[in-house]
Image (cartoon, rainbow over the protein chains, first blue to last red):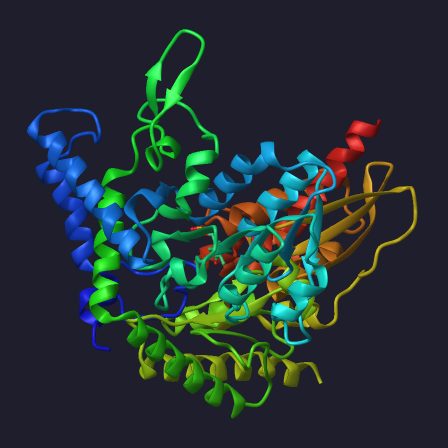
Length: 401
Length: 144
Ligand SMILES: Cc1ncc(COP(=O)(O)O)c(C=O)c1O
């Protein structure tokens, strides 16, 4: 995959950027599309009848079709949000009137805080029970594990598709089928899967699916919520204001059809258009090829780390381009400072997943995550940096003897 | 930027062999716990103040070498100082981290953290133990 030249940041900086799981770089094409909006047709959407506004609306809705097509949904099943977090919060809020004491919400310890706290708080507000799907020893969510906690009282099952720390892929299709047998609604956090593999919401058959533009070559500030049409039609909006209303009276109002019902206020128009361009770019690369490319880099990384002394890898069976590890006896913050000097950008910390850290019995880890613009030379650079960091800190140990 | 300017031997020594580590069950100490949610550094400082003098400082926590060692260095540097002088050292230390003028003579071993100013991402790591210390003596004020 030879696309490095498409990314202006990599032109300016000699960098091994290995933190895509936090946010991805943006290709020129996407930036260009967003510029075009401000330069050529900077008007509001869904409002004006003049030419500029019409053009802005057309491009905005084109982007919705592109994003919908990307996950095999229909355009009216895609709600634009501020990102995966706000998409998941939207679902939790919208379900509040339908949840009460005695109901169960199932989540897992593998979740990012964004797919944990909305449900934790929903359970607190409604008196529902929050239950954790037990993880396997390796830290995976399995069909068997869901079976062990799923009951007739289970109303919602909210699970990550790919863990942002462990890189495991959850069998969401099988889990959805099982949850549906008991009448539960399934919400999938696809923030780490949508950018990296072919996705088909019809095949998964989940009820909702959330993802973020900025993790898939698009701009920050926008994301998408897929919802089955019948849910989006039934649920009440969670925010009220311009654009989402059909008819306003003195004491009540009626709503637009979905998805506009859930999109009040002026949206981030340029960003939505940029998001649309990002998914077109990814489709041109081919998501199967993207997945294969990242897997190869992860496998190469694992083999290199395996050959190094003094490294503990926490997810040697990762299914994605995410590798999580530590240098024994050296705090990950100290490691990333050395790596930064070597031009390697890596994440250190709890990765917004403190329950995963507790599962690993660590307070923080290093995480390398790969994407289309990475290649073997980035991994080599990472490994050289890690050797340097390990030797540098081991040097102090000598001094202390 | 040289790594050796950030990671001085004395810093790593305090990291591996912290002084005054471990909290006490003693009501006379004022305790302050600070966590940096973005990175997980976690520090608790206990201060024993008597007759306007910092009689003792204890610390506990987990985090990177810069963060943990700074709690240990602080406990040594500030111990037995009159409160006013201790707070002055803390002010000078903060000035040093953020690249302002500071009085090097006052800082004693804490001068080892001068290199942090060239690593802006690590200023927070070097600050939170000192912040916690300041809170313990301010919290003490409130009690009186
Ligand atoms: C698995 C997962 N879920 C949700 C999120 C939240 O995404 P955002 O911060 O874009 O809302 C992230 C991003 O950090 C993630 O990795």
